[in-house]
Image 1: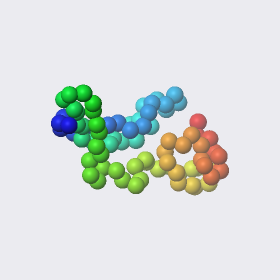
Image 2: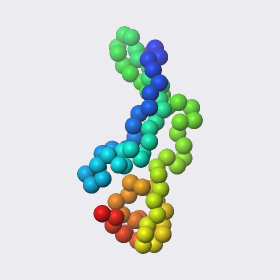
Image 3: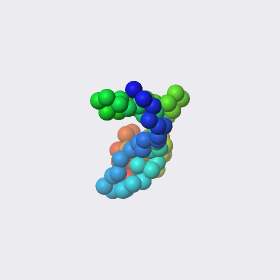
Length: 83
């Protein structure tokens, strides 16, 4: 395996309701990319310290005040729907 590069992979996905907003707020994962010159297989390795416990942004429910991940479509505590 030969070192190819160090890149940031975008986390999250594009949603139907919010479009690219959740994707942009999800951040990126810092990885090192290695490639095999014989079989052309690519492997990704997370850069040390790139993963943190609390990666997703948080939001507060306007109904009950519960704090949860931004990508929930409704509050997990009181089921308040945001959209």
